[in-house]
Image 1 (cartoon, rainbow, N blue to C red):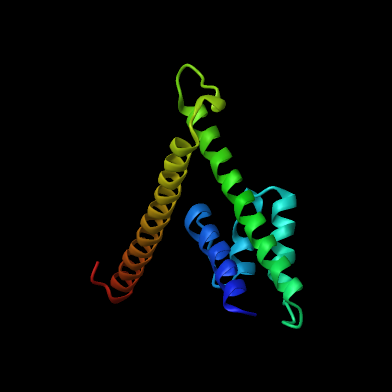
Image 2: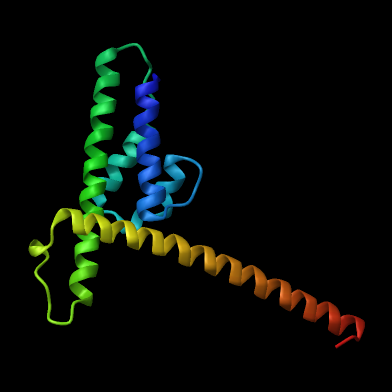
Length: 147
């Protein structure tokens, strides 16, 4: 794999992590964590890309892989904007036609939603850990007769 191929695969991983709150270390793990949020065709394309290892023998093969990465990145962006449009339309009190929204507005909403999801995940993880520590201390206190 050349630097261009690695760069495009890293871009897809970053999109999944930042825009869709995917977790994992590799593209396959990140895709598995958010598979239900993506359309089947897009998820299948990402799975085939993640499982495809170019041999490096052919520049055409590598160019095709880079082109496919670009296509999938654009499809991911489309899904992200569609989800943002649905969220905006769902909260609008009078109902809102999603075609009235500018793509730049949807992009801002999508980034906000992704940031909100990451923040809420961090808060939930901290809260869970704090509760487990408190319960552990309570059990130790009961066992030692302190409480």
